[in-house]
Length: 418
Image (tube, rainbow, N blue to C red):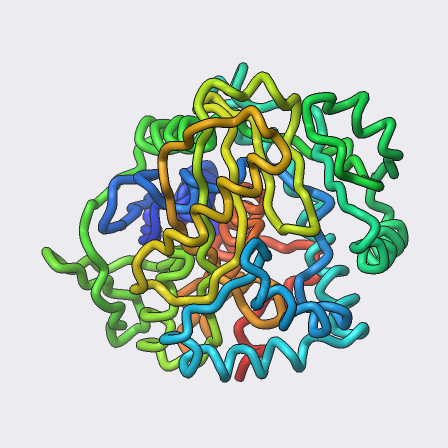
């Protein structure tokens, strides 16, 4: 596409989360005229604000693993376990779970890991490009991330460690003594761990996000705080985005509204099995000095990140859709788990619930719609939406600009579900 055509080419992006903002910034760089539409203020209590703040280039191993099926019943029954189900949502989840189980083979797991690794490997350089244009000093730390576990959990770890080794991911196995040297304040309950030295973390994801949004506006991007109700198409297949207040015609459009994307893809007559993992966080204010870097306690499936707001405790996966209220039990579970590692913690604050858009094969959907050549998708990044924001933005903007790439993008296509 020549520069003049791009200059005149308008793109509407549905969703003002990290995916939408990164896509929009990359499109503006390429000369497109971009409008983001979202019913909420950017960054306000969304997953882009409430996530764990990890930049996790090592995290290519999916949840759909052969060994996970043995663990699921115990996880669901354990009161402090990492997995929960809202029983009123079970009937809706059954088709998704059946697809998930089909994906829990060694072959499928390795396929997902390979194609997650392809994009994760480029994730941090893509952020470095964006961060050249905003001031993130004091907001991003390069200290790695530690995972640790007790003996009971050793078998699963071997599988992960070996697969990451095959993919060439940098990891350093840690003895209990080494974990204590790196993070002396954690109660010594661990038997082993691993450090991912190339990982980084955000001291305040919401602040970084808002800086990116301000940059988008400064570069001429437009934002409409409106609720997108549907996307129609003109006679020449141009997308017309209809909101509660108006309707807008664009040359191309992108659906990047995370867990809320399914309503729109269903309307586009595409049956993408997107569902929601509900994640929680709380803060222990004024305790961020207890940790130097994020840690994840694998046996209980939760993590703690030192942030400006204090220690942010995140985790638990709850399958319960978008409409169920916040589950106080999951909040109490997070608080108890944090106090198990740091007995000196007292009262927590900021109960938060967010939605992770997840597909049963644990690969995102990135690419054009099956039925409309001018409609593009970028969602389903599950636990890695924050990590993959910048690289997704590069990939989708490249597709819209019809640029050539040496990446194999077919594994992310929505066609895999048709």
